[in-house]
Image 1 (cartoon, rainbow, N blue to C red):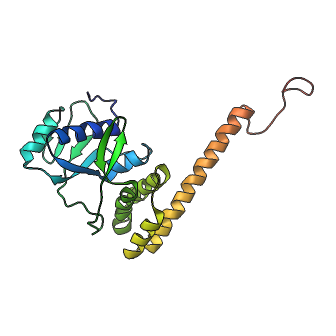
Image 2: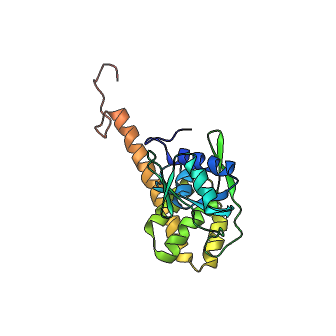
Image 3: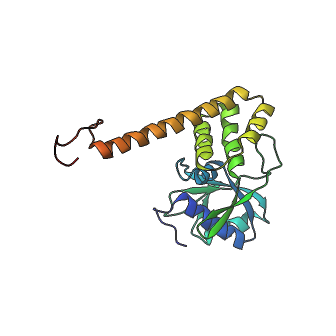
Length: 210
């Protein structure tokens, strides 16, 4: 599969995951790219983080990435066409001290990418908000929650364990705010289509067709 400037982050993830699998490298997609996929592309990221779990050497990873056109620059891999770059943070895979993370196969077309579940991706982004007041992390978590099925009870319990009850409530409030804003936008769009952009109903004629 050839990568181009038009390749989505989902396609880049699938191509990289396939190359790593061929090279017998086990790595788990996390971070903003995983959130982008679980949000259906509403949240955007510029890079892909694959957390390394099983591999033999850095040369093995470089060879796998080179087979699909990526070259290494420092700790990052860049493609001459694709607009997303790739990083391989060392493991272990964890979220705010929780090491009991079970990756899942994320379907992308007829391919799959090993990555965080939607619930864990949401927690991963919330951790940045909880501990570093990262508002982008909050936005990403909200879009994951709206774009995929997440276990809010599990996230609530984890948040309480982190002493972040208030920030969890901020997360819930933001979900509701974004959901209401989207509903209002949809209603305005329907009104525009029905009423010809006037925002109010106006019959064309007293006696003619409506």
